[in-house]
Length: 209
Image 1 (tube, helix red, strand yellow):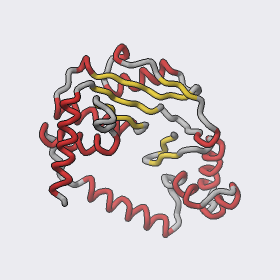
Image 2 (cartoon, one colour):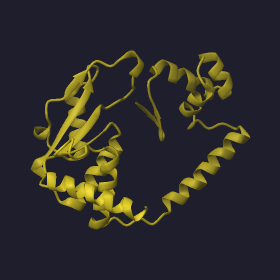
Image 3 (cartoon, helix red, strand yellow):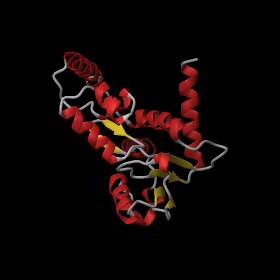
Image 4 (cartoon, helix red, strand yellow):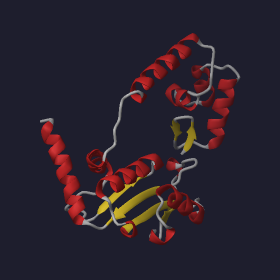
């Protein structure tokens, strides 16, 4: 993946992305760039969303976006150990391995912020034994395994000695990603906490039924 501001770009070569952004900076419209590069307008729009333009409609949308984002940013959020348990349980239900298919905790995702957020909440809410935290990475043959392992180790604050040998696969032509840091699975072998998180989600979902 390549990060541009708050955007994420997947499955396209860097040359095409760079060319689209150059054309946008030169003043071409989204439709004109899409026609020239033979791509869809929404794709070009995502790639160039952070490039300032004088187009009145674009400025209107950017102002509207900022206004609504500010509403979310101004929301009062208090993270207590109890709230951390709830949020960790909800995140785990979305991206974690479930019992009885799994008898240990395994939260996997390629979004670095999401994995880091889950681990922070998990640590605050459940107070795991740090030495029991394990990490398994799924990487591509194009990765520098040592560098990527160091990146995840620093991000998650988990020593590299607690990382398993990564699974390395060859990327397909249709799944090319730029600046993709692999998929990271944080594991913790304690079925009692896995059951507790399952109970948290079931309790939460029952309050909405």
